[in-house]
Image 1 (tube, helix red, strand yellow):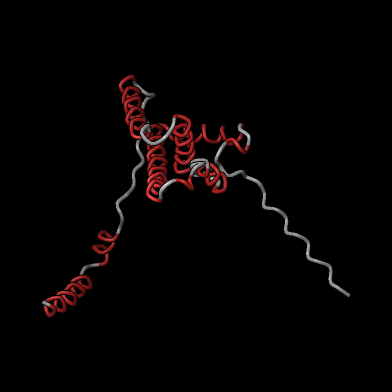
Image 2: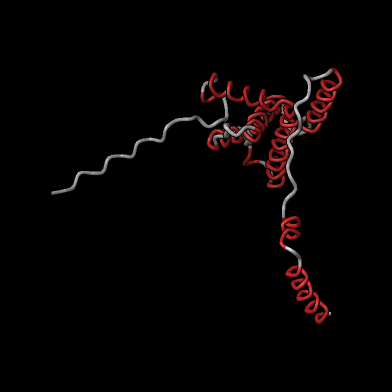
Length: 180
């Protein structure tokens, strides 16, 4: 068996070297990514499908989270989706960490390690699902979605959204005066 592998690898290498360069380029080139074409405004059928998707997502979240917590998960998901879809929007990692910190149970010391892991795993999965849900709900009109994100960033107070603020970097501190 080992001898067969040794013979196969050189044979494959010789075969690849013998291929013409354009053939190698075609094999190595990744498939082209095409963006979905913008469709018409939501139709009643599409709105019904969106409502059904929202119901299914809520069905998955309800056994673990309160209504308030579900609202915060959807909030994080919306901002994460906007940042993923729009080049000019980025999530502020400090704000995101604070938003996720609100899910830390007040009675964490009394919880078993299994329950803590369960909650952490569900939070990660559920924020991911909320992000995907928001992206799927806006893929037909990404420019409008990005405009809504920019509007949130500019019209809301900095502590009311999760986007990075476009603030200039702080000036460097002046160098200390030399000691005589």
